[in-house]
Length: 199
Image (tube, rainbow, N blue to C red; front, side, top):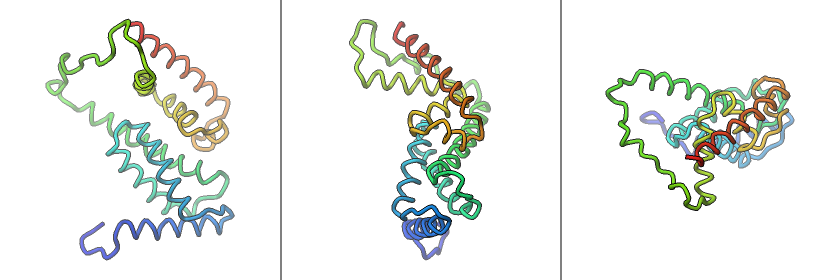
């Protein structure tokens, strides 16, 4: 919001979701403004947060997704569901953010690198009981160790619950390719998790 802007962000967002809903309904995809807002928030934020592991960056990306959806609505051809379309926008913005973050990290000076003491192993000692929370924590850590595009494929399939056909619409890849990628990523995840618990 710029200085002197008479419209609050909340009012702008509310008006924008109504406009998006009206335009989508006119294009044969009936949807309520509330549903547009829910989709933008739930899909965009949940996916962005999981993919980036940074809540502040996820907030920024979610806003970009909202703005791009509003801006690009005239180009929405209706060949996919609104959900798939929005996830496609989110996926591209997440990939852009991940590239920017990787580039900025590569420019860090070695003097800024954390010491071994700052990387203390937070895991339980061998023989201690592993509960569901710990397993979930290890799973999340291991998902972030997957290389792109395997990580995105796993998140779209299991976190967002998309079919391989819906994933193909978002990524522009063959559903069989995506299925094979997810299968390989699951084997890699299993190996990573087992290695964590064997230490």
